[in-house]
Image (tube, rainbow, N blue to C red):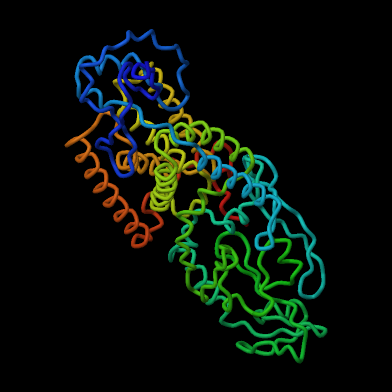
Length: 481
C-alpha cells in the first residue's frame, strides 16, 4: 500500500517517490520522479482538483493540467512544481524597512528626526532672527509639504535618497564657483566686539568698521558670530548668525569664516561626506540605500502591503537567496535607471525593488502558463497592479523611472534565477544567455550615461513621467528657498 500513497507537490499518483534532479538554472530545486517503473505501475484515478481562489499575485497551479501534461507527453513529467521554500527574507526586509521609517521620523544621533506638514504643496515658515547688529528681522522660508506623513526633504536626502549631486559631479557644484566670486571682496567687519566676514557696503550699512578686502577676522580680537550656513538641498550658503542658520534648518560651520571655505554638499548629503570645497561626495551607495527608505508612513504602508503579498509567493517558489538577489538587484537596477533620466529628483522607496518583483512575477506566469489555474485572471491581476503603481509613481519622491528600470531588471533576473518549470535544454540555455547579456549591456550603458553625461537638459520632459504637478509647487519640493 505504501507504493500507492498520494504524494504532494505534483507527484504522480501510484508512483513511488524517488526524486532525481533535472535541468534548471543556478540553484534550481526542481524534481521529477524516476521513469523506470512509471508505465508498469497501476494508476489510481485522480479526483477533481480543489477549487481555489485567484491569487492577487502569483499563479495558482492546476493539478488537472499537470495530470493532462503527464498523460499527453512523457516530457511533460518535467513540468512539476518545485519544493515550497520557507519564507523569511521577505519578513526580515519588511521589518527592517518599517524600523528605518520610524527612525526617519524620530531621529538618530547622526540624523535628527523631522516631520513635515502633511499636504501636496509648499508652506511658509516665518521666524524672527537676529542680524549682525543684533537687530531682529522676519525670515520667511518656503518649504515643501509631505503627502506621505513623513520627514522633511532635507532629512530624506541625509538618510540616503537617490540624488545625483551627492553621487557625481553635477551642475550644483557650479553654485560654489558663483559663491566664491561673490566673496572675493569679503573682509572682516567689526561691531561692538562682534565680527564676521562680509563686503564693505554691507558692513557700513550695519554701522561697523571694515578692515579691508581679503582680511580675515582674528578670533583673539573679536568674537566671530558670523559663520557660513549651508541650507536647503541645493548648494546655497550665507554668512549669518547661528540662530539665523537654525531658522533655515541649515548646517552652521563653526570653524570657518566664509562659504568659500566649506563644501555645502557635505552637510546636505550627510552619510559621513567629507569632500573638499568644490568637489562632490561621490556616494555610490545611494543606488542601494533608497530601497530601505520611505518618504513617510503612508508610503511605507502602501509599499509593504504589496511587498508582503508578492514577496511571500515568489520566495516560496524561488527560495530565499534567489529571491534576495532578484529583489535587491531589481532595486539597484531601478535606481540606476532613474539616476540617468531624472538625476536631480530626490526619490526613495522600495518600489523599484517591488516593481522588479512584478517583472519576476510576469516571467513566472509565462513559465507556468500551461499549468496555471485561471490564466487570464492571474494575468489581469498582475497587469492591474503594475498600472496602479505607475499611477502612484507620478507623486513626488517616487520614481516612475525607477519603476521602469526595476521592472526590466526583474524580468532579466527572473529569467536567470527563477526555477524553470517547463523550459529545459536549449530554451533554458538561450533564455539564460540572452538575459545575462542584456543585463550586462544595460548596466554598462546606464552607468556610463550617468557618470559621463552631466547635461541638465539631457531629457527635459523626463521629470513629468516621475512627478505630475497636480498642485502648484508639488514637484518643486526638492529645494528649500
